[in-house]
Length: 278
Image (cartoon, rainbow, N blue to C red; front, side, top):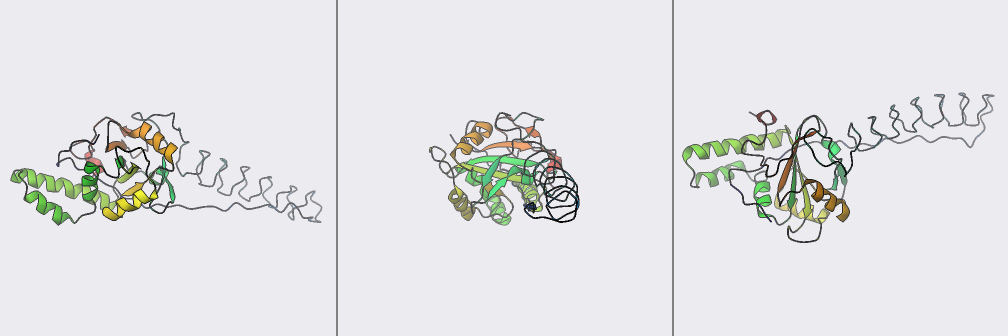
């Protein structure tokens, strides 16, 4: 069921630059004969058969034995030491690790409107993250998304035409300004997982769901992903969804769960002041 909203409790959004890179693993040439008297057949002089000169047998030149070229010993190519290739600095605790304040964050993955796979680890850069679980036809979700896709003055004009007191209108517009600037400057990250196209439906979202959402609410500063597949969608909702859409959870700058309480709202005092612009 959709949550009833107070217009003064609008969500914040976030921004991030996704830096996705790959490292090509060097291949050995152990099918030749070097003729150099080193006991190997790979064309170098270090005495092994892996085709490089660093003295190990893993086929690259970084001096460790894990088979990649990033210089650590964990066997992947992302340059950290946790043994996976998603870019996070800590090992993935997996689906068995339910969100708990201060606990490790599961390495959630999703696809964008083009079907490109992403990991929440791309946002692990020392900034807080708001995780928003929404549905494609959820009215409150759309209301919040519009805050970050519409001209601010248009929003201000609607507030001025409302029934709040002058002071309430002033405060509300200032809240929106601060949140919008936090989005636009990348002070915090906002990640929307569209798990379903219809909040009461049984189907799970796809890249087409994201494409339609971004067409309706265009923003370069909010990350919108669909689950990788139905199984991932069920896992995401089991991990993150409370009673209904939207549901929010907060990850701190240390990439640990900061707040997982039910009925969090990114406005109304739930977010620490230091996470927002002045």
